[in-house]
Image (cartoon, rainbow, N blue to C red):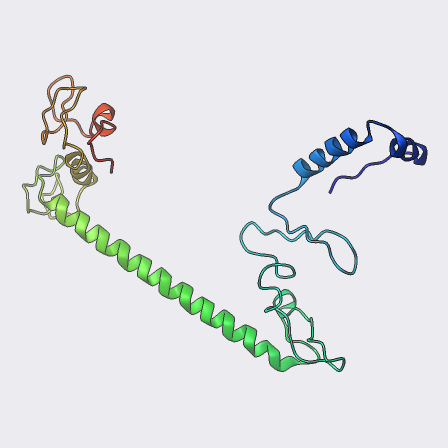
Length: 217
């Protein structure tokens, strides 16, 4: 909200001034830039004050698209639906407590749907990781020198590692980006990039990664 403070005489002068339209447009432009897009700012019907509820993460419970669904809705003596906001108050309507069951059931259903989506997302991540691990096993590990199709081992003890080394996954990412020759080190297609000393590079060179036809992982 933009507040303008001025003497009454100033407002009387501006009402008759020729530059008033331009000034009003400038004033409106400043007001628009001062608006916080993360606040509701809907005008309260009783107080006339803009609503200050944050709407960055979820709609306003008073003025959002579901505001009518958030209210009690039971018929009053006047015949109009009760406007008591069950979601905003977080407790049953004093006059119609039975309507709160609807909100609780809706929240329980929403929570169950969110948990189901989270479980599906976690399962999908597991499937993707299993696929990635299977592909990494087809390559030798540059850290412990485990051959393809063999698990990684601890270099000091020789025991089987609980998971593949990170450098083995990096080698997989490198392999997925070798469809084209490397303009930086001259490595041919399907060959790994090389360092200036001739050793296999840990990661693909940037010039090869962003080359047309290359695969960005």
